[in-house]
Each structure stands twice: as C-alpha cells, then as structure tokens.
Image (tube, rainbow, N blue to C red; front, side, top):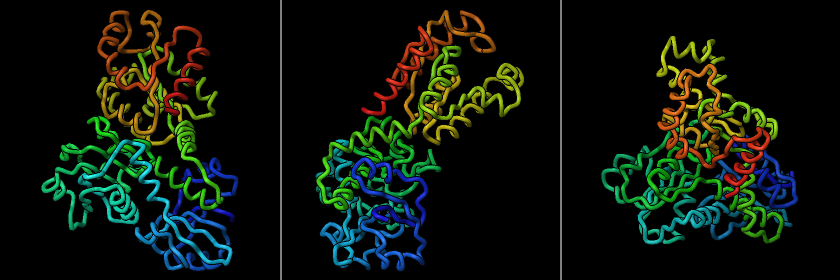
Length: 413
C-alpha cells in the first residue's frame, strides 16, 4: 500500500477518484477494525494515509511529531511515514474547510456562528472559524449543554450555521438537523455532508437566498493538500474546480421533465445508452409496481393516488446518483418532488410544440384543449424546476446531443 484512506467503515468514497487526478501514486481504501488499528499503524506498511472516522484522534498517539494546525485542532487526518520510519501527523481538513467557505463567499469574520455536532469534524469547523475571525462560536448538540431548542430560543441571531452531524447524509436523504426558518439572521449555511450534493439543509438555504455550500469542495481541497504532502509537489488550487466538475458529471442524475408526450422516454433511452447509465422511466415503473396501466390507475383510484405513488417513487429513485430519470408530466406539481430531483441531479426541461405532443393513453391530455390548459397551468413550474431547457423539435439525436451538452455545462459551472 502506497497511499490510501483508513477508517472503520468506508463504504463509497470519492477519495480514490480525487487522488488519481491529483498525483500519480496508488491510492487505496482500507477498512481497519478498532482492534486491528495498533498492529496496522505499527507495521508501517504504507507511505502515507488519510484518516477518517473514528480514528482521527486515536492516531495522535502514534505520531512522533504533529504539524502546528494538527496540534491546535487536536486531531489528525493525514499521516506521513518519514525516512526514519516515524509518523508525522497533519490536519488538511482545516485548510479544506477555509477554502470551502471562501469559495462559497461565506465570511465568518465578526459573525456569530453555530456548529451543529460535537465530534471530530466539529473540532475542525470550530478551529477554522476561529482562524477566520468568527466573533462567537456555539456548539449545538442534542445532549447539550446547548441543544436545538435553546439555540432557537436564546441564539436566533446566529449568522453562520455549520452542520457537522451526519443528519441528511445518504441514505437518510431529506432529513435536517435544524429548522433554519427559526434563525432569521443567517448569512451563510455550511453542510459538510456531500452525498447527496444538496441536503435538505442546503435546499432550505437556497430557497431563502442564503449562500450555502456542501462539503464536497472541502473534500477536494483537503485531498489536494494531502496529495501535495504525499508527493512533495505543489498542486495548484486550479485543479479543484475541474475535479469537482468531474465528480458532479459522473455522480449526479440527469433528470428529464416536461409535458406528457414531449419525448422524455425516448430521449431517456438514448441518453442512457450514450452515458452507459441505468434509465428509470417513472411512469413505466409505476405501471410495473401497480400492475395496471396509468389510465386504469386514474379510473380506479383517481389522480391523487397516482400522485402519491409518483412522489414515493421519486423520493426513492432520486436518493441514488448516476442515473437517467424520465419523469411523468405532472411530477413538478409537488414541491417535494422537485426537491427530491434537485438534491442529487441536474434537471432538463424538454419542450415540444403543443400540437406535436403525443396524447395516446394520457388521461390528462386527451384533447388539444386539455393540452393547452395543462401547459398554462404548469409552464412556470417547469421553468422553475429546470436547470436548463432543450427543444425537442427536430430529430431525437439532435435533442439528445443538446441535452448532453446542457448537462455538461450544468455540472461544470
């Protein structure tokens, strides 16, 4: 093992992808059980390591020397084996956190900040906030001494909010540790979670117009600093944005919305083939699960039941990433559906002349008048939900290519 990441349970990690683009060494993931940590570290069968939960403080005991920032924060996320075999401990999370805030335009200087959670990442956030000149830093946790109700009651003037808890992280998408509507003075929201790309907390902040960031820029920036330590080379910050774009383009869903009959299913098939991704056609999946056609569903149970099934399906399929998702024409009618799409995807609105929309087997658009009414009712919701728009008024191949180009732009900027 040259370089890699150790932790008790790693699951999926972007770290190998990131390090592969930063330097030319081999980078592995290695799960290490608590009882095996001592043997593993003393064997020194590695040249350098990143360290994650739950070992960032445990590895301190094995370090002959700590960098000043690692000593200040009290935990280590990067280990380097020196020529004499001793371990040097450093913390690149601090630099990554500071980079993340600056990138998002969030300046804690002179501000009152609240950090949710009291673990190792909370230590990192608090240290970084001190470095950036925060006026006051509160630590909020369920067990206190300052809990969430006390935060609302006594500290509603908080200006910077940082979530370091796993609340809202995959597979717990949609949960949020805090209700930011009760914190009316917020000027910046940070969620160190990066899967999904936009947690419920981030989406809440965006809806209120508050600058917000996920933890992905921090992950990339701290990896860059670690890679520089491992390789002994300076690595420009310019690498960060390209790596972020590559991660987004590979992991985010491409989601198609639009009027019934606009070509979402056909385009979805072409896009799935072009990107070698699984296709989820929501209407087809509802038919499969219900065991009956959509007209039969409407006739037997009504539109309300169909919308419930649609919402349940979107909540589930949008939880994952890397998919092509073709939605039903009315999927954008429920705000929770749009949030489900936005958490892990880029949304493309497919437009087609109303006169050319297919109406076969579509209960709500069986006539030209019905189609016109639907468009009038929905067009603003379509536009609001979409990240970009493509007109499907030529060949499917042309529209599919435009969608691929739009998806590239949406994930790279």
